[in-house]
Length: 144
Length: 464
Image (cartoon, rainbow over the protein chains, first blue to last red):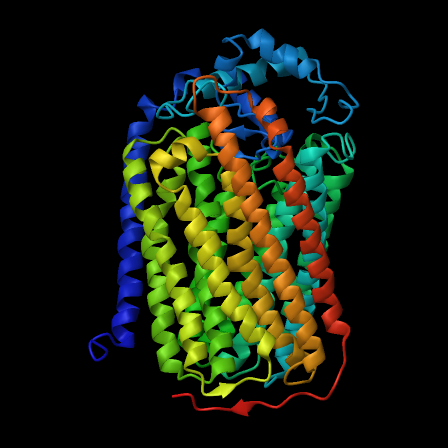
């Protein structure tokens, strides 16, 4: 065993194995791209939803919330918030608008971002688009 | 220290430790915000503090990796570093840029920062761990490329050892994969798909190559075991890291909109990901058992053994706990993830950087090893930080289990914020453990200032 398993065998496993799995990963990536149109709700990715995604990023919402389970774990999951709020974009907008500037004593609170009406619409559209992505039934229930 | 140019590593190590302190201070703030929701609000909201915490971690580990490379590459290559000037220049650029980025997080509202730095031209901001302004990201890319150039020229014109070559492939991967931080499609599924190419393929790919080569270097130096033996181990470990880790990316693709087959691929390869870490533990203990000399730097050996064990527990065991798709369905994005993240990063990357600092710093300061007295204090800091990290992980795991049960299982699942209030007791205990960690870090730093008796001498032993 020791004779057979030399350093050069180990080296070949490293280079050969890595190369094989890199190529396989690339093939799987191409296949994933081909299948995504049926799953990623791209029809709902309107100009306003894209604007909403930019606002989501430029205000670092991911620093507290999770989106499809990724982000920080300080505030609720928002991938399904559109469904949780009864498919009401107005409810989402009202929630964001109502955040007190100085927070709530002793409790976690979302900052007040002073979004314009147009920006609130964009954010709500983005969250609606996100809720339509096929996530294999995740999260397990409406609570996220 | 065999080569003059190795001394540039010292700058990097000092900066790394300084930024580490900042990271932990913000960790303590975050832990408190979990239980006192309005702490520092609205001046330092949670999202800002978290960004500082995680970005400082990444930056200080990069400083650690760079310092480690500048230390070991000349010695392994048998020549001086290609350019000490470049190494020093890049150090100041990187430190300056890093400090400016962190200060801008704290002093300017994030949205305003995005506006000032022209995020609309090339939007890359506001994604977890990749929050740096686009110009900051470009700066990181330039610094890393310059660093890679310096290291590559040194290695390729010197002695090409296995440690050198593995480190070099790791560093090339680090730079190349960083370029995916500039990829931010408007399609959320694709955004997340490529985001993992940086995040997962760094920590479960190229960083493991760097980790393996640093550990192998320290073990060669401190145990006196034959290089051939160590190099064979190194190849096997990193082969397993990439063979499991590349397709293992799939364990992040379960619920973000990608095809269902990723659940199978991600589960299978994710379940294999503990193997390289298990091998690393075996490796470290085996080499120390086979050692031909007892190195006078005992605390460096302790850090090396600790890296093996804690990386296996944190990245291996805690990763495996929730890597299977049917389990992850319930645990995805809960405190279980936070628990795993903490121990994995500490066990694998924090500890390996502290290992190499522990080995190299005395030499950079002109001695073979620190005095016994200083070593004992450093050992105290090892145990304080490591044990408190174990407790942080256990408390977060408990919080996660309760969270999964209350929020995601059962007849009447409770809302997120209601569940969070019920977890308060675990968060308080985590905060207490975090304070002990900070104390351990203070003890660690104080060990640098302890002089004590003259340097101990190596004992030559032949256990075999």
